[in-house]
Length: 398
Image (tube, rainbow, N blue to C red; front, side):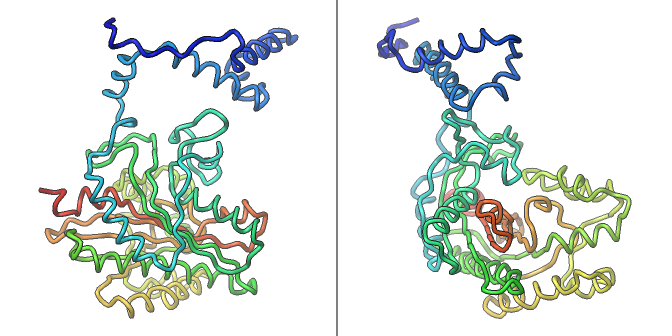
């Protein structure tokens, strides 16, 4: 090993706090009548502060043993720790356009970490999130950070007004990616609306109003992107509602467990939706220009929800943005177990005809759990701003 590989050493101390505490924990565990298995010890048997102390001790000792060569080799083989491939000026210029389009939303700069389990609480497998010591995890979705911020504001101010936030955040996800334009860490732009209507009968309407406000931001963005140097020729919105989709699929394939089918769909594999539908006996995705005309929908109790989404979201959106195409997906599986009520996708199309889903969102029940209030309504949507630069920016494509 060459001298250049030797890091400046952090001085060892016999009085190091984590080492002393870790030794004390080890003595306590060794004195238990039945020594637990190591996996049980780490997962359940240790108290929270003991678990954190042992993690800190172990990571500190391993860090002290590493050299510049070790660090270099990990950086070379792990995309998780490498810089993004896009020009930082372009993503920041796009952020400027996004923040301007979201001018009615308060802009916040989110923390890079969240409480341990935040992602699991909203339905994300912890294996797809980078856990950290001190009971934290690296942010994997800006919407989760906005939900925590919203809960904090609601608790602090006891406000019942509708509150709106937006944020641009670099997030990290550890699920496998098989497309070169995808990377473990990337920048997202997210919107969030927290609402509680004066009357319970208006709560669902508040959700639809939030969806309309979010879509207006994304529609304005689509209009402005060509002037900003992006190859966005057309934009399309696909609307769904989890209750309508579940009712429709139960009527089409009553023998299939819809929840299990939806959980097998992966956002990073768009073809997985069609695969799941075909396996269940549905030949193709059921898209409609007016889903209230579908015979199955007309006979369902959920017809009023479908009609309200058309009347309160789609029609005013198209009146304001006539060039925007709006369709309905009666068989959308991706996000079916994640959202609760109306949900959406935003598609952008290049001049060449290539079209991709670049934005996603919908109503979620997170705030009900965070504030122990069933009437809280929380709506989120986000756009892959980094992916937008990689695939639609004319300068980036040269």
